[in-house]
Amino acid sequence: MHPSRSETGQASWEHFPHQADMGVRGIGPTKEAAFEHAALAMTAVITDPASVAPLQAVPIVCEAPDDELLLVDWLNALVYEMATRKMLFSCFAVRFNGHLLHATAWGEPVEVARHQPAVEVKGATYTELSVKQDRRSRWVAQCVVDV
Image (cartoon, rainbow, N blue to C red; front, side, top):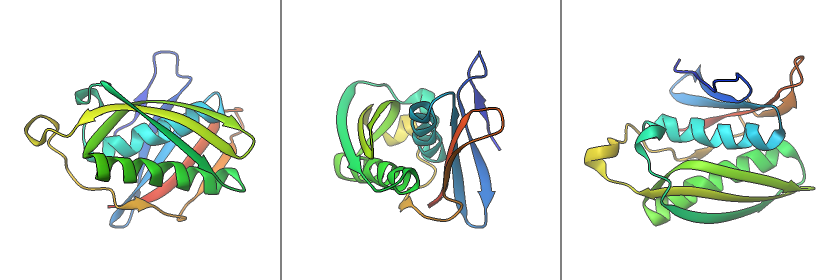
């Protein structure tokens, strides 16, 4: 497990083991931060997010009937953008309007020699899917991604 914690300990991401796939979990003081860090955790399945320069902004809009389905749609929208644009993302800004997610993902085109992608994420799944506040009032957004 390779956790990443901010200096303040407020927001973070981490991986959790799940058979042949990988669980991604975003943790933050807000639901927005948890979704942003879940996306960062997904990037970290592929490469070191610190190696990805936030040079190009890509807008993303998703809508779903609940937070869990919205997380899957958000991560799958990022998988789609990574595949079609041949990009990796390292910085995310998420905001909600009810069940509508508006986001911007910043990244750059993949450079295999520099980014050394470990695996390709095929998609987010409903396995271990959860978006809720923990007993410390932190938001936790998680699911398993198919690699």
